[in-house]
Length: 469
RNA sequence: UCCGGCAUAGCUCAGCGGUAGAGCGGGUGGCUGUUAACCACUAGGUCGUAGGUUCGAAUCCUACUGCCGGAGCCA
Image (cartoon, rainbow, N blue to C red):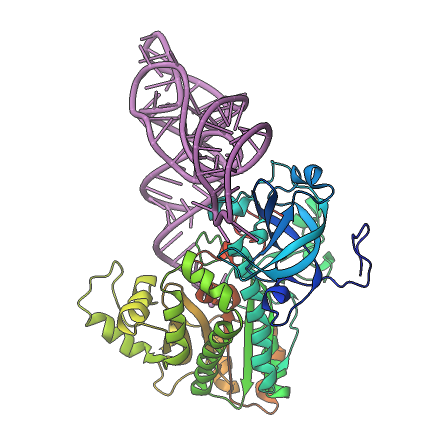
């Protein structure tokens, strides 16, 4: 495809800068298209740093002052301007790059005047969030979103290679009892009609509808047909959470395995994390090195450790004992039967295990109804995978497959069997042990890149009072 | 939602009762196979919004808004 006004005949293919920089063989004359990052002028020529997003690095183009149009173009060649450039790829005379382009023809496609917000200096993340439409053009966000893309691909590859079937579970759900937090209401009712008596039956779906907070229950139905499935899609929580780890819209991966218990569940979870990090280390080396240099100096060592070292596994009961025996004074008391607080989870992963740790067999009273009851009568087969710096990255469980136990648990949680008739049918017809978990995709990207705020690993973050762009 | 902090030039910040500053970015000129290039000059601001205290407020007080950090909820 040749853009209008191209300076070269269509026969000459555009090359991505990544390919130009990686090429082992002489390339001769090539055409590239991208955005100016910075310009440095000499008396008789200018250096242009051009980036097209294909990789972190820029192509240095040497633009000779004797070329036609040089003087007119120069005033337009500011940071942000889009250009098409042709020229020969030659060995660089300077330090810092092995090759560069000797420009033969240059065309300004779209000028970026001096009001362009991105300067060739470091900006704060807070400022860049205000220009979320332009921040992908920075080094950091370029690296983060290339890594995010690769991780997404690696997740599909991981499951597809293991025979898992990808299921698209619904985004809109009519069951308001998924039990994973506040839900966003979906409705076509407006004004007085919304509040009127019996309004729900006149709504689009004839009942109350919401955005999904989890595809798990629907995922279970497919696991009980395809044995191993996974979902990978957007998830919505209307919680008024204002933290670096929470977003109202985020992406989640939820595998569900039939004929699988909690141990098998933990194995898949741990293997998945390790495989994904290995994949990123191999395929995103340049971007990860950048993150290691400018985001978190300890990043690469930590990733290698996570990829190689087996994860610690500690039962909830043992974890409580470890916390009580730690000699640490916590703000919140450690009590068996209570939730582990952030400070407790941090101690377990950052100080005790010094790496990822899986906590399993939680008290039944603090977990949802669908988790499988253990024989001790007081815990359920649940697990949380905690990683240093982020906390919970995976939460999962073996599901209660015994109809009588499940209905009893629903009664204890005050839930109506009628609302879950199809979920209970799975236990009525060919029930089978099964287990699964949810992996927060953004938290994974945070782990891999070292970026500490979820708003900086998702293109356009949705958080309380913020849905711009 | 709770606790704490912050809001000054396009960006990053200094100034903390007495005429609004620097670096970067922009412009002009110079220099150099440069690479966060360098040197000189130059333009650029209702100091978040609304009240209040004071002879005088960017500076002190109050409210509001937004953002940041921590906590809760969780992925």
